[in-house]
Structures are given as structure tokens and as C-alpha cells.
Length: 185
Image 1 (cartoon, rainbow, N blue to C red):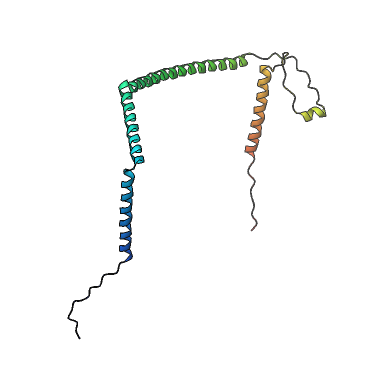
Image 2 (image 1 turned 30 degrees about the horizontal axis):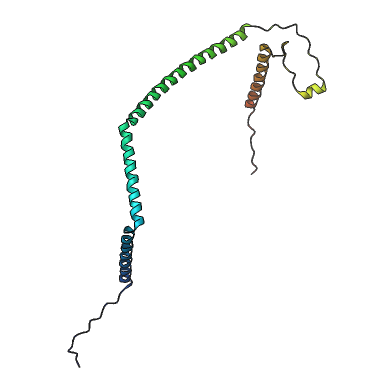
């Protein structure tokens, strides 16, 4: 029994890919319709008109600014300020150098004066033995002038004592050999 009639053509089954394509097409058509509807609305027309006005206003102000020559004025003012600042910095450098030279001369003069002037000392009196309270309080203060200020000689001798003590401590520590570690095995 043979079928001599037309063959039945089966429609291919729709796969998930074809269904997704149809869905995207429908969504696109829907969005296009809504955009067209929004463009025809009064709100969209008002916003577009306001945007155009703002754009024109900004362009006009930019043109006015360029025509006014304010840009050139600002550039020349900036150039002048830069030149003045350069001059001021140069003057400050010169003043700084002069001050440094004066300070160096004054320092040299002070140090030379200390070398030339020998302090007048009275005959050395025997130092009084310190009491227990004085020993706890620490070393005695250097000699002071009648006005209550330290004399240059007192300051100089105090600084020499301090540096000599520090040198003696460091050289003694440098002379000691490091202790050796012994390992028991």
C-alpha cells in the first residue's frame, strides 16, 4: 500500500534560539513605538526647546568672551605676574645671600673674639667639698657673671668638658673587643 499522494511536510520545531530572536524583535518594536510616542509628547518638545535655548546661550557667551579680548588680557596679566614673581625671587635670593654672608662674618667675629679674649680669673680657690645633698643634686652650675648671665668663658669650658667626656666614653667603648660566644658541642 503505497501512498501516492502528497507527502506531508513537517514544520521544523522552534528551538530556544528562534524563540529568543522573536522575543528580541517584539521588544525592539515595542521600544520603538514608545520612543515615537514620547517624541510626540509635549514634555519632550519642552525639554528639547529648553536644551536648544541653553545651547544657544552658552555659544553666545563663548563668542562674547572671545570677542571681548579678555583671553588676551588674562594671558598678558599672567605673563606680567610671572615676570614680577621672577624679579622678586631674584631679589630674595640676593637678600638671602647677603644675610648669610653677614651671619658668617658675625659668627667668625664671635669665635675670633673668644680666642683673643682670655677670661680674667681670680686666684684659684680650693673647691669646697660637696655635701651629700649637693652630690645627689648633680654637678654644680658654671660660674655666672654679676648680672646673672653665663660668661663666654664659662660656656666655652662647659662645652669643652661635655665634648671631652663624650669622646672619652666613645673611644673607651671602641677599644673593648666584642665578647666571643662559645658553643658547647
